[in-house]
Image 1 (tube, rainbow, N blue to C red):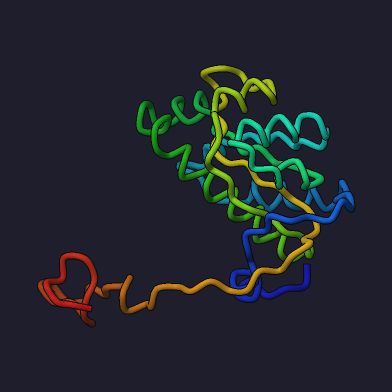
Image 2: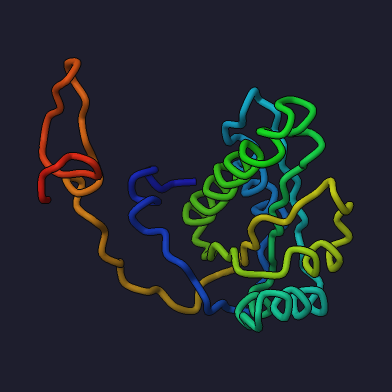
Length: 192
């Protein structure tokens, strides 16, 4: 990996057109390693990854995602699942309902940023039929919950940057009790 983290953050794009070139297994291993280096509540590491290379299964995933054909076009789709049993064993209902989703989100972002460093494109896909995706990959019902589908491949497009809200609009610094620095922000009583 040669990219600076801030460069990877700025360069990451949602890619929906992929070249047919295969992603080397060694590179996929590095992406998955990056995913597993993510923080997790109580170090539960309550995630599981299905790496789908099979073209027929990728087609099925695309159908389960409402016909998002680029999932089938990518040479690999990583199905990021939350291990509900592992999360619940550590934190009860809160682990099963919240922490495992936070943990899989962190793992997914790590995977996506690592992909940028290897010249690969990804897209965060959250719109899909969970039950159907679980059936397609053979996830244990009630134990492994599909949370994100991540197509991975060499981009056949490089979209331009998308606008971001200004830091002043989304940030409020709390300093001394009863005082805050800056203007704006939800609940501030001032207009941004």
